[in-house]
Image (cartoon, rainbow over the protein chains, first blue to last red):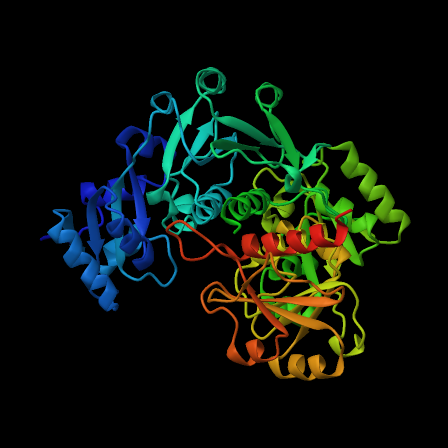
Length: 265
Length: 265
């Protein structure tokens, strides 16, 4: 077991850099923190490069068990001082357990006959919303997420945290708008687009078994090129004075309508 | 029209203090920022004490119109320098328009025969979730929110922002658990509690016309004293590997099921 006591150790410096998308892209790594998240990563056999802990902060028996399990899986275990831990920790009241994971991206074009429920996110920016959408998608029995364009990435620390581990169970792909359009032509999956303007209510849609739900950003909605390849457009009828819903809430409302229709007895 | 050019002006200092709950509680004021939010506050005749703008930052015609409307309503207009504006602004890429609002709390015990759809939030902590719940509640035609216990307050800047103005259209009350229990005895409104454990699906509930939906925090759920006064408990059936949903997403799923049942033709 390795010990690091210096804040300027090269490996520790790199962990701090994982907050930046550029560095995550370059290394293919990402940062995760907390008992629940790391427990879930281990449970799902998620590829972790290292686990970092601080014995002054780690008070939980579950946390010590997690370290033992990680060691048995051959993951590098690194003990750090509290001072070192606080230089990369993103949590107030940290539990003293963090990890470096290896990103896992699936190739969209290998998915010629995708099954089940997927989401396409077109240019969405908020990593908190993204993580929350992963959590709801997993809860609704979904298979995976496809990012299009300049979407925030699934391995942003805020997205990882707010996914509460759903990230580890989902297939994650990224692609361009043009490649998505090609993929749609070659695969048999249905595209259901969500829009704010007039369309059928999401309650009235007969969601196909194999489908992608397509959502755009709160500001811009779906781009017209994406709307053009949708098999059906749906909307969430609303009252009140607000003109739209939070993106993760809107996604959840539709996802759980789909979940209910699939699981209704 | 007043002009302030000093960061240490007493009024500007007070605005910065509005980030703190204690200061908001003492003064009964709150801080809001951005074109959309201030436009909505003016549209709904929300009580504003002052509007602050910075002409170097305010590029939008809509923003200048808002200032004119505010002036006609007798709201104090204060021009500040960019340096001053940045000391209290909470937005990256600020639009140069902010305001101080007067909090408006309704007395729960005056609501003896409350009508329509309400939410009770029991000890919820995350202001972003809270704002998002207000947005969804308004979108689902809801009337108001009742905070119980140590909930984060509706006038936290993050809650105000993520409500996208729903805050201005809803009735907001706060109370204690004991007073909520008394209120329930004296009013005819139905209490529907949401829980994670086994209960009827939210899809199967016959939501009464006048009801409160009761939600607890993600960590702790509903307290047993609150569960005891519920007329019905509901849950959201789930699949996947996650064990719960984000609170605002869960609230939205149930709220829009209620909205659909009320508005189905």
